[in-house]
Image 1 (tube, rainbow, N blue to C red):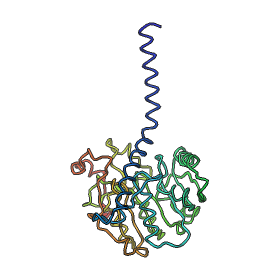
Image 2: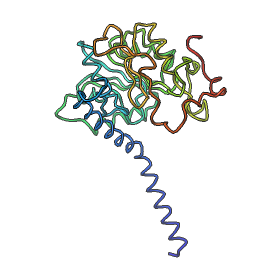
Image 3: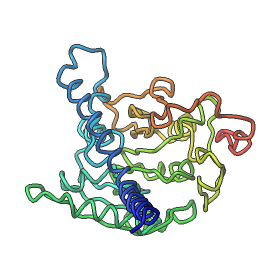
Image 4: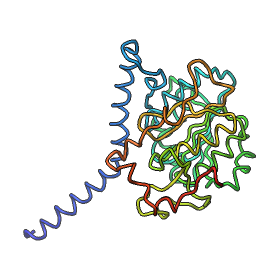
Amino acid sequence: MNIKNLTLFLKQVLIKRNILKLTDLHKFYLETNKAKINDINFLLSKYNHLIDENQIASSEYQVYSKNGEDGVILYLLSQAKISSDIKCLEIGSGGGSSNILNLNLNFGYECVFVDGDNKELSRVKEITRENINNDRKKGDSTYIEMFLTTKNLQELDEKIDLKSVTLCSLDIDGIDYYIFEQLLDYKIPIIVCEYNSFLSTENKYTIPKIDNFSRYEYHESTLVFGAALDALVFSASKNNYSLVYCENNGVNAFFVNNKYLSDKVVPKTVNEAFKENFKYKNISHKSFLTEEIRSLLVSVDKL
C-alpha cells in the first residue's frame, strides 16, 4: 500500500469514527448537563437554609428530561396536592429526552407519548427498554404517531380523554401557542410548555398559525418558532392558569391551574420567571428581533 492509499484509508477510518461519535453528541450533552444540574441542585436542596433561593429552583433534577424538568414536575405534583390518579401526556416526544418518562418508569404513572415522527417514538421506546428497573413499577404507556395541528386535537381527545390528564408537556417547535391555547380548555392541572426566549417579553409574539410549520424552513436562523413567554401567560391568565416557574436553562415554562395553587406553588410574573435560553447564550437575544424577524411574527393580543 503506497503513501497515497494509506492516507486515504486513514482518512476514511477517521471520518467513520467521527460520524459514529457525532451520533452520541446529543447523548453526551444530556449526560454532561444532567450531572451539572443534579450536583448543583442537590447542594441547593441540602443547604437551602444558607441561601435566599425558592424551593422550586432547587428541586430541578434530571433523569430523562433535558433541563431539570423531572425534579420540578415532581415538586409541583407533590406541592399542588394532586391526589387523583395521575396520567401524563407528552406532545412532542422526540429528541432523545422526555419530561414524563421518569414518571412512567420510576413512579408507575400512566403516560401517553405523542409525536409526528415514528422514529422519534421509537427512540422513546428504546430508552424505555434500556432503563426499565425491575425494582420499580412501570406504568402503562401508549405511543401515538400523530402530527398535531389545531384541527385534530379533538381526535387526540377522543383517543385518550384529555380531561383525564394530570400533567401535559408540550414541545413541538412550531405552533405551540395555538395548541397550548386549546389545551387550556381541558383544565389539565399542570401544563409544561416550551417558550422561545428570543421573542422577548414585551410584544406577546408567536409565529402565525401554520399547521405544517417547520422552524428549519421558516427562517434561516432556525430560531423563529413557538411563542414568547408573555404570549403564553396572556392566554393562560384568561383561562384560570398561572405561570409558576421557568427552569434555569430558559427552555420550559410551568403553568398550574389556579385550583391547585398553594403556599409553595405561587404565581410569578413574566419578569420574575423569565430566563434566556442557556443553550444559545452566545447569541444576543436583544438584537435578535430585527424588522425582518418581527415581520414573521404576530402579537397574540391582536389576533
